[in-house]
Image (cartoon, rainbow, N blue to C red):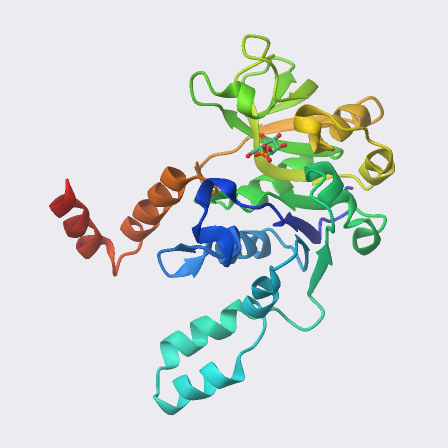
Length: 289
Ligand code: G1P
């Protein structure tokens, strides 16, 4: 029996350089997709996978993230007075239960491995999820739930992967696998941002992980890797010498919302997927093409 995954780490401290200047005063993961911030979809996905505690790793100037998941009596009272019960219910759904969310300052932008390590005291000695909030995953069965299901079969550690766009594998963490015909395969290696032409496969690490707590001991002394940053991929590669890792090719579509066009695509796709908006969205898009 595997130990249940109840906590998720959401590293949100990145500067959002690809979506500046918009991300200057609004943390990039609070930018909207249709009418909710990206982070709201990520938290919804986590809840659907059984996550009960959310650990946000934040940077300076990102207090708005805490405020977003907190109650706002002023707005709520105004909506109540106007009888706007639908939107009021939606607002209240976004609010975390008291004690369910932790916010930890990363203090220095030393890389994803360092961000995850910052969560060690809150996670303690149990398996946990990591979700990269730039990567919005649209799937019938939410992506993290697919990862948890895989974890329940294999135990150990799970990394969600997908094929990288042609010629772009060097921008990501790339995995090497034992050949199998299914979507869940044992990993044999991984490398962060391999030099073009040296990629062990075209499958990139796309932003959902289930990890064992032993990763923290490794990250504690992890040296800087690609880009001069402390890389989670390097920490996982070291842990792979002691524990099993499986890669899951999840079923769904990923939108990289840390990128202008990715964010645009997500807005279009999510509007078209909303029954009450689909017709108007289609007409608006058509009129522009
Ligand atoms: C990070 C990870 C990388 C992963 C990528 C997905 O890289 O280090 O392994 O493939 O996210 O977006 P970054 O985008 O921070 O360079």
